[in-house]
Amino acid sequence: MLYSTNMSMEININCDLGEKSKHHSNIYDPDLLEIVNSANIACGFHAGDEETMHQTIKISKRNGVSIGAHPSFNDPENFGRERINLSDTEIKKLIIDQYEILQKIAVKYNMSVSHVKPHGALNNMACEDIELATVIAKTINEISKDLIYLVPTGSKMEQAAKKLNMKIACEIFADRNYEDDGNLVSRKKPHALIIDPELAKKHVLSMVKNQTLNCHSGKQIPCEIDSVCIHGDNINSLNTAKTIKNNLLENGLKLKQLNLMKKFTND
Image (cartoon, rainbow, N blue to C red; front, side, top):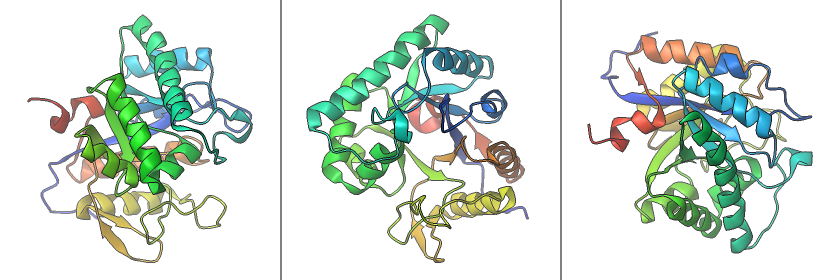
């Protein structure tokens, strides 16, 4: 079904990439980088290493994909998905260190880290905790006011970033279900993931069209949507990404790199 509404709006597709580890293969990363517009690259703390960062940046450049840091807790054993309580100073160092690791490699390819998106438990905790969200937002803002902060729409992270007048891109998750409070359904629950690409396609287009979060219960929450996240560790991630991209294009949306979206440029 094609929507006849004014869908000349811009949208971005992002994906978590370079996450090679014992938990996850990055075998499909080159294919995903031909589909998505922006890459959130693991910086070695939850997954990935210097080699995967080089590879991911190199392929991103070839495909015109913007790159972002994907900082996490230093917990490769649990893929950064276990909650860890750290001090504000430790959180700040965590973000800065991972940004600098990736940026140092990016400049070798005449690229620049243009956005930051926290990973896993760090992201989930900041969605719920305004104090943690504020620490992360202030840290990113101190690194550079030009950095785009990629945050889950409707989250405490969005609230904290708006108070600082940061460049914000609000994202939805193509392959995840939502609770009625707007947070993601825990991966420990059986209905957390949307595996079927066709279901994910409908899920995404409906949310983008209506600018709402579609909760598992049927509830809809009004929100801002700039970007759609495809998870690279989903068994059907490649098919999901292709299906969603084609469906968005068929419905008249313009796909853009985060840093080239009109809201972040003077054009």
